[in-house]
Image: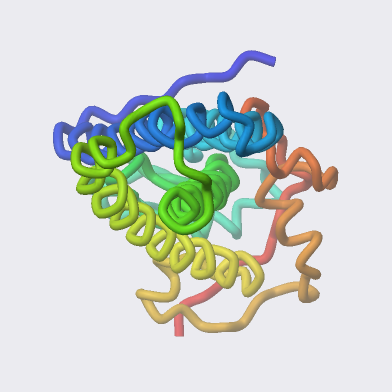
Length: 265
């Protein structure tokens, strides 16, 4: 199935996503070159660890690309509104277009997004109904890759046997700053930040509340029965197959039309 691309023209967003991509490059090429591959070549670690590291890195990059280029749920200029659902639509006071309730107008992107959670400059895109699951994947795989990097940095100095193919004193002098300090600092910052973001996003999904709704003090009343965590995540990811929740290279298909709308206090 063809994947549609969606780009936001925002120089500040391009700068932020370039920083994120630079961190990914650092972890994908620097750490394996100095730690992973040398210790694998000398038989200190099994091939499975090397494969798992590169799989985590590839999934992290795929999630970043898809989250930043996927349509978050942009509303068309002239939407086809079923007569039975017109009571669930409202007029946007910024673009003067009809939109479903719980949609929001993004001032950075200049259009309304269905069930918009927030605009994230680090992916240069809104997080909305159609790419929320990709943003979750990005948070999750960034945690995995950051934790993997931290473990490798720790093992390099406290667990792995010294490498016989190089001068250990020269290696420590040349790479200690970059390997131990920069890599560890980036790993701690990324793991801590993404863990906090992932927890916040999961709490919002399970409570059926977006970040914008929390900030706008929407009421907690939900029309309809309370959803289980499986169904809440299935709606966000667009499938009941839990394995597919972890795969970024696919299209999301809504399970069914949702009428769990909120009202102002």
